[in-house]
Length: 214
Length: 214
DNA sequence: AAAAATCTTGCAGTCTCTGCACAGTTGCAG
DNA sequence: CTGCAACTGTGCAGAGACTGCAAGATTTTT
Image (cartoon, rainbow over all chains, first blue to last red; front, side):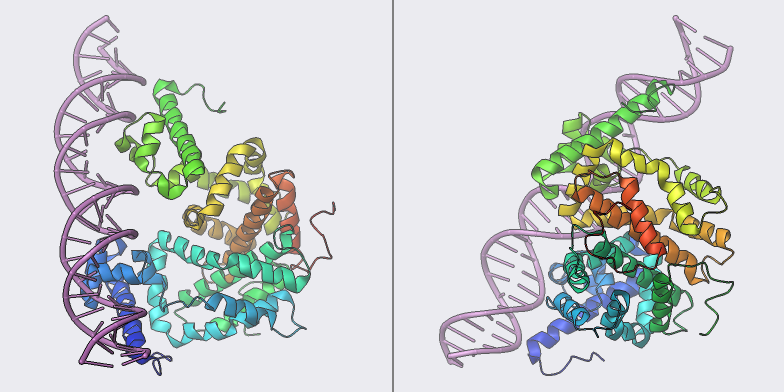
């Protein structure tokens, strides 16, 4: 099921399994009973580990719902590199999209799981908060990378932070729409549309724009 | 000090005072010792009320830092109305800016307090999460209002959610920059610049753009 | 097979946050 | 100004999130 289940030793495999078991248990239980009626102990029991182990994997209950896979330390830097290595003829927005392109497939591949996750987040705004602060962790590095690519300064200039935040806004609203129609249209397509609208200065569209095909 | 200290009966006045006392105590203590080394009990003691009373005013420790003044229920709807009542010749982005114009003055008026708040938020990303969820509470209503003003649908169309999120991104990055120079330039000016950049499709600026005047 | 590294677990303890009941204040009508 | 109604402050008990510590189990390495 997981693409990285091979060649990693028994120990690492077990760890990944436990992580996934806890994440799925959290997702299922919270979907059924609501966030407040599920304790960390419930999730641990469902996954067959001790409550103490739960907190070895997730610093908080919320993380069990939001962090589908263990995040490697390098992932942030990997994204930054991917952004900087994007074709030179792409504008900053398109370079960001290029950077994300691989990740985007995951939404359509694990559609059910992600839809369930979004449904939960929708019912519990506190979770959306954590989502944002998750992006926040690598924010500075991404902003500096944007500054580097555009020849500006990461903290003195407005542009890099603005571009990054605006890009995040585009992704967020596109994914929201994706979840709204149950993933019937590929996520990449919706994000492409959002980025294009951003790049055009957010003109008010004619009526029924999201139904149109081109 | 507060503009609304008059004509509200002794009871309401005391309540406002307690709220402010707790908020200021939280701000001061956390600025000194850091978020983790300040308990709700500490803040209550500093403000001269019981720990139980603290939670009568704020649902969480974080809120004591972030919610400077008691939020009225109507404030959200007031903003929505202000947006819808904006001059008809303004585009959606400018209408949003118009809606915010009154609030923006508060940053420059209580500069020290806000700078202190941002410094704390900067050190504790978890707080940024709460900031977002605060905006989130009225999100749906604002998106619907944008849909109404542009003749689109709030949940079926991408545009309203995208515009709102992008606007939030502009405000966020402008305020961040404002805090970065210690509020030397008025917040309204920086946000104006961010909105203009958004409306122009986020073109990569020439060098040193934030120093330029026009 | 033994040693080293790592993982799981239980335990004790701190802190956040809530419901409840009671006491003290304030607002208001008569 | 008096008495009632509405509200506010506070203590208490308790659930639940989360952490440090140390002992035991498991995997990896030598």
